[in-house]
Image 1 (spheres, rainbow, N blue to C red):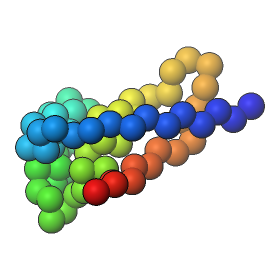
Image 2 (image 1 turned 90 degrees about the vertical axis):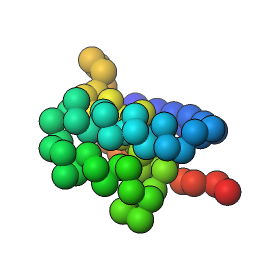
Image 3 (image 1 turned 30 degrees about the horizontal axis):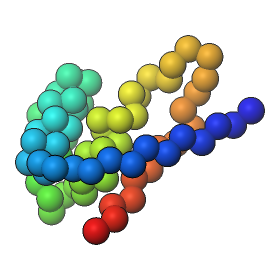
Image 4 (image 1 turned 135 degrees about the horizontal axis):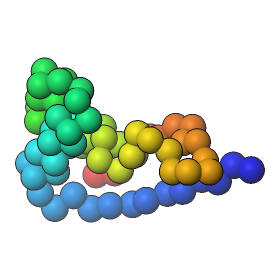
Length: 74
C-alpha cells in the first residue's frame, strides 16, 4: 500500500528556518561544508531546507519513505 502525505507550511523567518536546516545537517553528521549550504540562498532553496527538516531520513517502523519533495509557492 502506498500513502502520500502533503504538509503545507509558511516560513515566517527564512534565516531561522535555514539555520534550523543547517543545525539538522550538523546533527545528522553531514559535515560542516554541506551544512553551510543550507544558509546560502544561492546554493539551496527554502524547499530543500524543508526537506532536510521534515523528512526524518530514517523511516518510521513499518514503512519506507520513497521520496520527499518540496515546491516553493510565492
